[in-house]
Image (cartoon, rainbow, N blue to C red; front, side):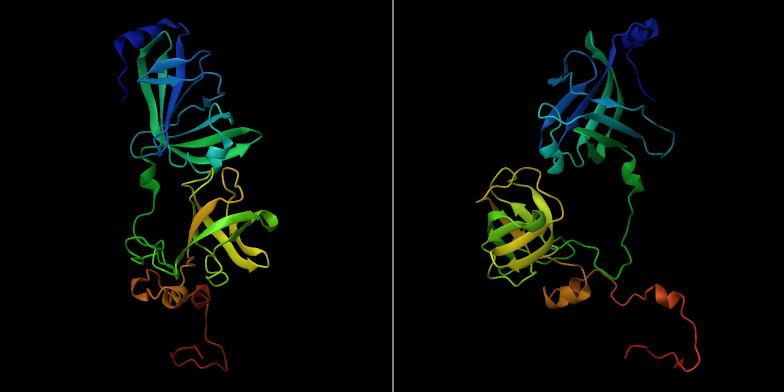
Length: 296
């Protein structure tokens, strides 16, 4: 149950229109941003909540028990507010958000209405719409291991235990230009086999995207150099000469774990798990039905 200051409650009961909404967004890189739907800036807790950003939010849906609070916020994409390049670069992924009802005449009179994190962000026509996930959202996350043929770990994490920085598994490249259909054309990776970095992770070292990470969809050798296809375009412009580091790709199969990384003892999948065809299998005339393996 929310506790509302008695003076604020008296102002709410009076019916005067002195109430506005304020949102504070804290990105994981430490950047704090403030927004308000008031027609003038509002300042409290050492942060200025800026007006004129087009920020708005739907009514919060809340319930008792362990139900998850949820809401949506919308606003304009602009350099003065939330920039499209920053959204594309993932700088708002998992950002913390708090939402208050504030008396704009007395910002010290306010009540916290919502606290949570950014969820899915959609972009359309120079605007954004973001899902706001409440503090109970982690209760919806799966717990425990997944029973899959493929590995459920990420290359180099604690359970995988493979040293992805070992010689031969990490390379540095320099951008030569753009390849076909949005691929990056690079040099410096000639010592690695064709396709070695497919499913790998690329980290930018220099340029406007420095520090950002991207998953690699495809790595192939072409006449002009090496083409790397990211799953998603970089958030900011890539310039000729930008340097990056890329880690060998893992498709999470048992074969790759054994032959490419020599790490099969730490494989976290179930490669011999029967497929759906075994569920619907039945005896047929002329087949060998003695219970032995059907592998040739």
